[in-house]
Image 1 (cartoon, rainbow, N blue to C red):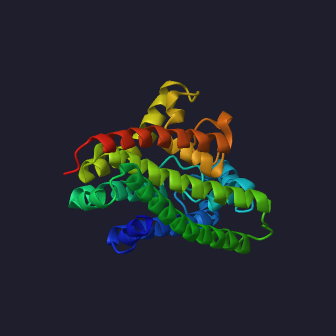
Image 2: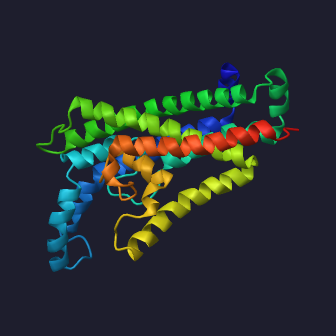
Image 3: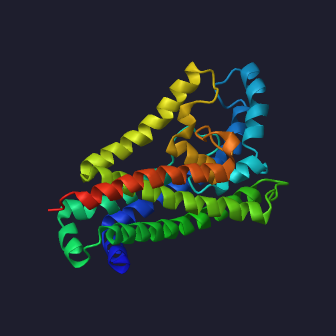
Length: 289
């Protein structure tokens, strides 16, 4: 069953498009991050429309934030979610993983292929387990490509920045990549859980899209009303994934810093377990025809 699910993913365009979107999004974010210092420098050369006094006040702060030799920005470059430094948006990588999981869960239901699958393998738990394993394998393969792109991005950033060097320990680099791969798998399973619960492919994709759009907006509204303090929105899945991937402070979207990266990973896994268990119970009980 696992080989069959991998074959479905390998021979359909959707999985390849999802991988391409994730990789292209990473390339775009890396290119923007590497070019940020030069953009900031152009503000101080008089070529921008900013008043001189405003530019003089902003440039030192912006230069510190876009210093490619700083540990914070190097962590951002290595982040597999490709959120970018201080981003409050959801990266294309997150979108791709959620959509991948949604397609894995709903394509057989849409085409009717789930019926012969269930006849051959009556255990519906095994069916979902095979789909989850295939999704995790695909997410890891995509993640390995993202690791290569982040390593190249960091190499370019250090090379073009005079006096810059790698400020992160090898263990920290491997930790960012390892947690990033785990987050990619969890987001794929989250999309699969949503798809298994909803069943309809169009409705699932709309729900995933609504989650991607609504969480950052809701987080911003609650943060504005509450004065930036801790809120229930800090425990939403996208923010927890951001926290787990690159650690506290790497993104505006990150969840509660008190959890730490591993705590964020555990909280995101709890979301997946709860929704996945609900999807499994629903899948067991309903008619597939």
